[in-house]
Image 1 (cartoon, rainbow, N blue to C red):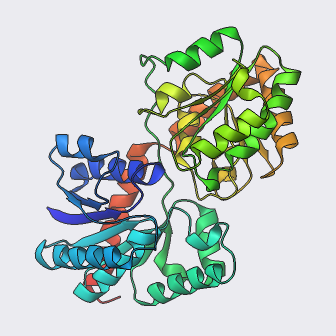
Image 2 (image 1 turned 180 degrees about the vertical axis):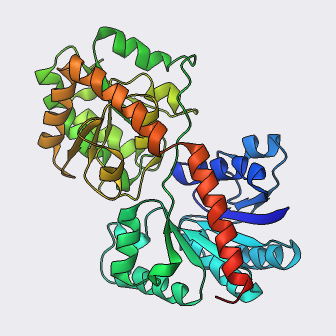
Length: 378
C-alpha cells in the first residue's frame, strides 16, 4: 500500500479537520496515511484511536521562533528520508513551506493545500509581497497545489505561484449532519425563545466576527424575539467579549459568546441561520457544515463562498458591513417559509457537491496522478 505523510500546522479549525477527514478515508483508496503536526491538535485522539500514526513536531502559526522552525524542518527531513513515504501532502502556509523544502531535498513527490494563501489576507507592505514571493519560489521547486475551490486556483494563477498544469481543484467536504445528535443545550435554550442566528468559527481576524457583533443590536431591535450566538475558540475571545460588552450585549440574554466543543454539528444544528462574515477565505468548512445540516447561510462574498452558497440556500453579503449583514440576517429570521426551502436546498447542495466521500476519492485520485507523472519525470 502506498504511503502518504499529511503535514499541517494549525492546531484547530478547518485545516486539521480537513486533514483528519482525508486521513480517515484514504485506506479504502489504497493509501496508508501518517500525520505530522503541532505538539497538540484537536484531531489526534481520533486518529490514534484507529491506528493512524501521529508525529508531533514543533510547528506553530508564528514565524517568531526560527529555531523551532528549523527543528521542525529537521524532523520532516528525517521522516521523509526514513519513512519510505511515496508522497507528502502539506496543509497551510507554515507546514507548506517546511514540507515542500523537505520534499525537494529528499526528492519526494509533494502536494500542497494552502487553505487560503497567506497573501490573500490582511498583510501590509512588505509582508504581502514577501508572502507572494515565497509562494512563487516554492512553486519553482516543483510539486502540485491542491486548491479547495476555483477562486483559490484563480488567485494562484493571478499571482503566478505555479503553472496551470500543477494547480488542481478538489472542493472541501463536510460530514453528513446526524439527525439523532442532540444540539448544544445553551443554544437550544436560546432557540426556544425565538429563531437563532449565529457563527460557529475560530475566533481569529480572518472571520471578522466583530462585524457580527456590531450587527447584533440591529438584528435584535428588528426581531426582538430572536437570538444571536457566536461559538468558537481562539485568540480574539477577550477582544470580542469586550466589544460585546461595550454594546451592552453582555447584559442581554438574547446574545451569547460560547466556547466551541466538537463536533461542530451540535452547535450548527441549533441555528436557524448560519452567519460567517469573513474578511477573506478559501472555502470554509463551517459553510459546508451548515449546508449539510440544512441551516440557511448568510456569509460574506469572499473566496469560494459563492461556489458553495446560492440564492436558494442563503445570502451573500459584502464583507465588513454590519448593516448589510443585519439586513440579510433579519430577512431570513423573519421568513420561516424561505428558511424551510433554503434548508432543503442546502442539504441537496451538500449531497451533490460537498460530501467527504467525494473529497477523499478525488484527493486520492490526485495522489495517483501526481505519482504517475513523477514516475515519468514530468
